[in-house]
Image 1 (cartoon, rainbow, N blue to C red):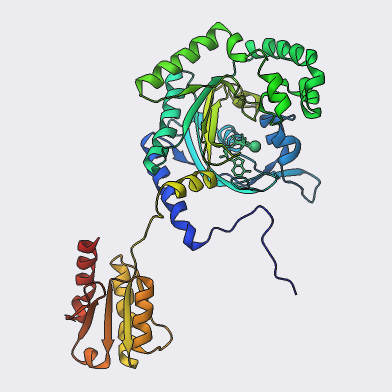
Image 2 (image 1 turned 180 degrees about the vertical axis):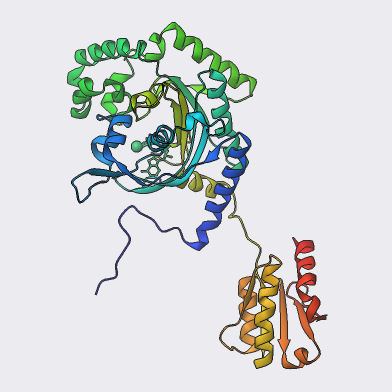
Length: 422
Ligand code: ATP
Ligand code: MG
């Protein structure tokens, strides 16, 4: 019989990789909490309508990338392709606006999109997501981008650039949309079939088209940033001012449109040139109409998502893997020593150290080999003789020295040694 394999595009994260993930997650949690963000965990399955209504019916995500499931009563559900919509849903459903502490949220978890798997692009991938509600002032826009940049710096990532743009508001974007449609109409013969369709369904999306001849057409297209209204222009210029206050470098990219329809005004992406075609590490923006559009109060919002696989691919190019502290090893010889060693292992773990021991009555030689393979600095050796004298031998694997310890004091002494070795 053939072995069962994981679903295509969905990866196992094995123990030899997990150090990166834990390092990224713990750094994120510590940093975001300093900015007042609180963790939220929402289900991976939601009603399909939530994503269709928020991300937009005529986006790639909703048109072709979602995993949908019809439940037994015929209701359509979808595996979440991103986190913002779910967090907005929870914000409305639990009336979190009333809670002064629950205005800023972060989430870490898997997302699902049915795309062609390749390096940096998977069908189950993970995002770090942050969302903040209730503030219209551009100071928050700058702070959100600063926090994202600071996280990347704390993780040790340098080869990235912050791109920013403004997508205008419900006043100015529709006006521009008509201008763009007219431009696309004039050039329709030069567009790919997808963009010919998009010129009616979602003309802004044409800026995102990867086809060369469309890019050539779009290079001549009018730009939204040149025709945003006075309020949006004022907002954008203040965002830039605050970014400068925070000494956060940025590049203005007037062709960046983002793949989701809910964005208004400020949008941004973190771009790298080190991952081939998958050049976006993260992105986000303001979504001032989304909470209201999903049936909630008229509350502005802003957020971003970082792709963790892409982030970790970049970190791996720049730095060695994070290393954990190797375990203390307890080697035992004889039945009494085995029982005492078993208890000793728990005593040492209770003091906070990692302990490995022999479960299988191997020879002392093979236990020592295993301790060596695990990278243990210290091995406690117990034989029945030692037990008789209430002692243990302590072997320092690095210095290749051996000494005798009273058994009762062994856990505390080991802890001291490990602290000074660290
Ligand atoms: P792309 O243009 O690469 O398709 P996107 O605009 O669809 O990205 P967003 O919806 O902005 O991506 O999601 C935020 C981040 O999540 C991306 O910048 C990327 O790092 C990551 N991401 C998105 N889709 C995938 C995927 N299929 N596999 C791995 N990471 C992904
Ligand atoms: Mg995409």
